[in-house]
Length: 186
Image (cartoon, rainbow, N blue to C red; front, top):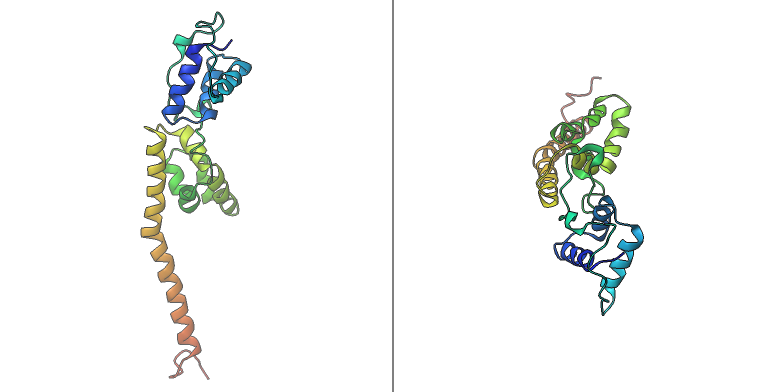
């Protein structure tokens, strides 16, 4: 049964910036029926909201609390939609990122052959694993930290790659265009 408290709760969570999916997950964890949740959302989207009864016998609305940060709770964690997606930080730093984010499965990136595959797996699943394996203050804090990983890769690793590439080009040029014949023995 849809109650006014349920509708108020949903409106509050939406105004706080929570996603529809995370609100629905939270309500489902509080044993609300999916039909009631869907009906409440459809009522909110209508221009005029009908006033439902004030109390439900089956559900205790006072148990509804704002959506909790479930990071660091392992498999019990609910991963927010904002976190899902490809993780460039995990992809670029792979095993180093894994250690820093308590995602120990990422150490498989150190193994020959498996490491190449694991790098891509970390890219696709890394953000979710990091959210589940480490406690974060907020989604914003999580995203800021992941962007820092990328920034430091650009500052540290990218210049090293560029220098190595330039070094190879310089050696190649010296070997090809060797006017003194120092690299070619006749």
